[in-house]
Amino acid sequence: MIKEKYHSNLKILSELPSGSPINLVLSGGAEKGVAHLVLLEKLEELGIPIAHISACSAGSLVAAMYASGMRPQEILYFFKTTELFKYSWITLKKPGIFNSYNYSNLLEGKVATTFEALDIPITISTTNLNKGCTQYFNKGALIKPVLASCAIPGLFNPIRIEGELYSDGGVLDNFPIDPFKDSKLPLIGSYVDYPSEKTNTELNSTFKVISHASKLLMLSSEEHKFFSTTLTVCFPLGEFSGFTMKEVPEIYNSAKDYLEKSLA
Image (cartoon, rainbow, N blue to C red):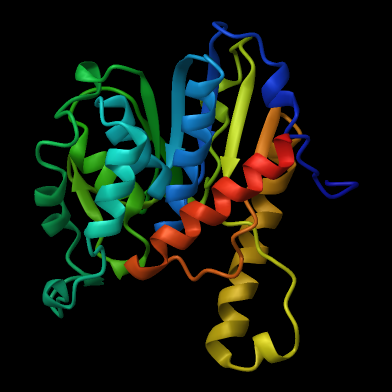
């Protein structure tokens, strides 16, 4: 049980010894995942290498691209120019509004085909819908686990892997620290779906109330994990929906401004 609200002491980043590796955890958050790029750039600037990345949903997409050799600005350009919610990919014949399998084409040439081909080891959090549990992937084919980890239930259809159906890891584990439970390395987290305080006007519709409540519910399941990390950067991006490409530049700039001011 959380006895107090978690507060990020971002100055810990500047105190990490240059050249000493860390483990990194990236949360889900749809288009808000571009905020992870700000932290990746800062770690590079500080000369802090990443030993392993554990990620969920949008964090998995960022991790897979980064570990495949793409630079943060290249990944940002992908998010700026790629519509992830294409109306032409809407399907009525699958258990999801958008056909997840269409997204594999977007990743060709950007993401390695296997975990073993990555420059940095990564672990991807997914939800096994058949068994009702979290399942981590860290070896073998890469694309399907990434698509599964990003497949928000109801919005994207589940991904079939070896006969079973997998969906968004954020259903059960949006901040996957368990893969590092036996590691002695410092653990740095990036959480991009932290809900902001809302006024009555900002909660004046069914959709707004449900959306805000779902973020609060997810935070209640994840916040206790922040206390188990060396530092978790909780980016204040509650003003953004995370479901439109138009927000991407502002999300990135807002996250960068927050990190720079916190380290000043």
